[in-house]
Length: 152
Image 1 (cartoon, rainbow, N blue to C red):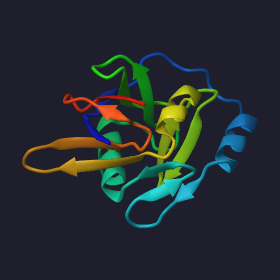
Image 2 (image 1 turned 60 degrees about the horizontal axis):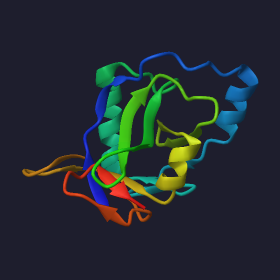
Image 3 (image 1 turned 90 degrees about the vertical axis):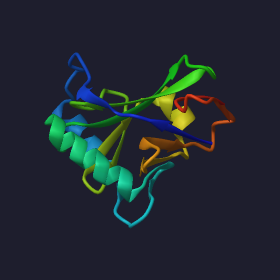
C-alpha cells in the first residue's frame, strides 16, 4: 500500500536531550550508509533518490543542519484507518532513535514507529495531480482515501 503525505516544514519544538560524546560516536559508528542510485536500503528502511533530493532541498530551505538534524519519520495513533504517518524535521536525534544515513541525509525513527515502518520505502512524487512524499509500506494492510492513514 502507498500513501501520500506532505512534509511538516518546521523543526520539532522543544529540545530533546543532547547525546554525550561517546553516545554520538557510537551512533555514528552504527549509521548505515546507502549510496546506490534508485531506492537505497538501510536495514529495512529505503529512500528513493527523488526523496533524498527533496529532503535535502527542504532541509536547506528550513535551515536544518545535515550534521546535527534530520528527517523524523513516525507513526501516530489516529486517522481514518487507525494509524497515520508523521514526517517532520528535527534538530537532533532522541536517545532511543534508530538513525539512518542516506547520501548525507539523516533519518530518525523512534522504536515504536520502527515496528510499523520496517521494510517501507519513502518516495517523493511530483506530477500534475499530486506532489508529496509517498510511503510505500508492506506492513500496511489497509489505507483510506485521505492518503495519510493506514492500518496493519
